[in-house]
Length: 174
Image (cartoon, rainbow, N blue to C red):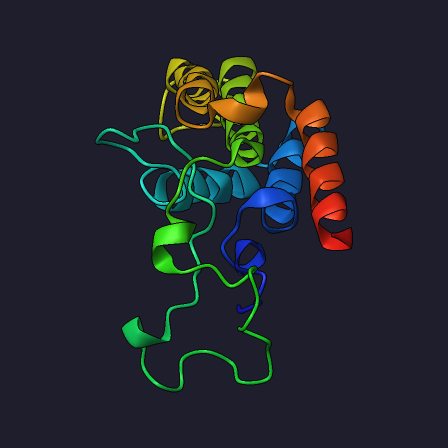
């Protein structure tokens, strides 16, 4: 429920998105109506309109995290006191709402793509939206990444990750 690396508890980035994206990808090989129903609830109740903005100037932007560390906005006993919250990984609400981290977009686009494939290839399996809705959201998420988080997209996600990790290591040594 909590981690001082707020993207993990906040369902984003590599560590926070792994579980829900793996659950979605599993459905491509062995779709299960009950599990797909849970994914539909996740898409409509967590991804669209929460992890991903559904309106305004940042529409289709993907937040860095749904979880954040900001004790002045929460009850005194809300955050676990056994975690190190004095780190760059403990983003504030404002930092967690930023959409400039392009690494977060492929997870969301992939979830929509899975739902598109399931809806198109298995009539009646997906009922919340037609396949076109999911395909359009995968596309718009990709376009949102290029518009709202353009820096690393010029290199490609894997090359950008290498550049990011290299600059982090270099600055740590300095």
